[in-house]
Image (cartoon, rainbow, N blue to C red; front, top):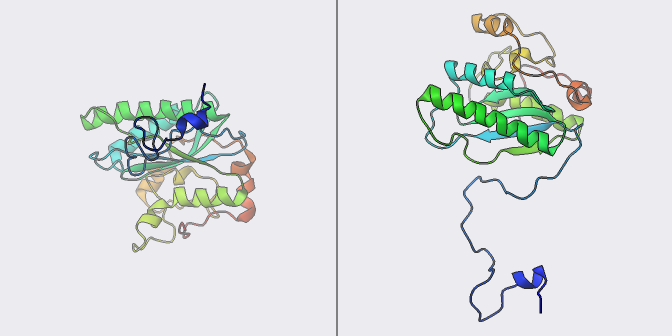
Length: 228
């Protein structure tokens, strides 16, 4: 008699072989499930986290951030755009738009390959750069989008909670210099700020309502905010 899938997966007492609960290779800490990602409407932007494999030195360095910015600029195609970003020592945060699930997957895979190839060359290393599959969370409300923007653009305040930041500080490793949702203009009070402001934005302009206008109903971002 042919078994159903549920019957085939049910272990029989006293018998060897077959499926068993919790059998197989243990999952690595922080690994992302390979279950099929749900498809979400294109009107929802995404907060994406990409983690770097162990043993790679910090990405938040002058020469490397320039490479990453160029890769971001090249990534906008096929219904995929990176609208905001932040480069931390061992991971990257992105705010993205994608036409559908496939466009998101292809866009992030292409971005990862581009970053890995160029950073491996700059670091004189080979092998895997990103630790495992990306983590993406769809942002479905104006409040979620505002919280994600604050978290991404001001993330160093989240990691350095004890550090004092100046009132008008912006993160040089992020897209903060080109972000158009600040409650006040970015001040040209430091040479590095002037240098960033004179560059073309590597990010793409948002197109979905939640990123262009929707989140602003809860107020523009202030420089002195801290992520929750």
